[in-house]
Image (cartoon, rainbow, N blue to C red; front, side):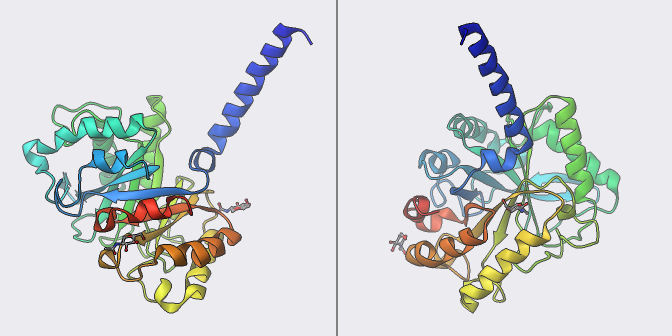
Length: 313
Ligand SMILES: *[C@@H]1O[C@H](CO)[C@@H](O)[C@H](O)[C@H]1NC(C)=O
Ligand SMILES: *[C@@H]1O[C@H](CO)[C@@H](O)[C@H](O)[C@H]1NC(C)=O
């Protein structure tokens, strides 16, 4: 075969592969067996460690910064990184370089909205769309004179909504995706961190127009802890039943699913040790399918746990 023809075919194949990659972005990019770590709520750089250190451990494929803890209802959005830094003073801007270092390692960095403390939610779609613009300006491709994390280009959002109602998150996500596409930004990932009882009261999916009924969802980190009805404390059958439920109930998109777990017994009720994870939990949910890995809450509460599960997830 003629060489030029071959390379033309190669280019064609490359374009085809790229198209396949784009249309199956979530599954392809976040293939099987990743560890995801949440960061920002376990004290300061000494107790929790820096974001750079988390990324440098080599254990994580995605890190999720928690939280944008106040937004909507006429509030200025507030970034809360616990004891790490005080965002309003500009002290969190030093994390811009750590975030860039994480991304250079191929780690996706998402910003989580919500959290346990509350003080968020929307009354109108306009408020949600306004927040989309604010997030774009401060954390993504837009510009702002005083971004809480400095000059960063985050890879997406995670919704960890415990209170404040379920309304208008779809407007937030839809508007943000629209802005990103209009500006030819990199692919923006939308993650959700629901509790394991399905559907989640804030995020769905059910028939109420909640975020998980949209086609925006790329990543689902289901919290299998602090929920006696579906975490491991009721036995593995409860957990597996809940996993199946999530897989079958989400139909508007084909997201990657992660089992979200505490990194130690002190990080949440329903801790699963490495051996149980390896011998029973991971094999059981892998059999059901649609499994992409494990997300760890409070990785700093046992810094060797992530390494111990990396090869078995
Ligand atoms: C789960 O995987 C199956 C088989 O690959 C696929 O057909 C289905 O759409 C997936 N479901 C979700 C919710 O991603
Ligand atoms: C941390 O996790 C490792 C790996 O699972 C385990 O061997 C070790 O005992 C844990 N450390 C503590 C203090 O629980």
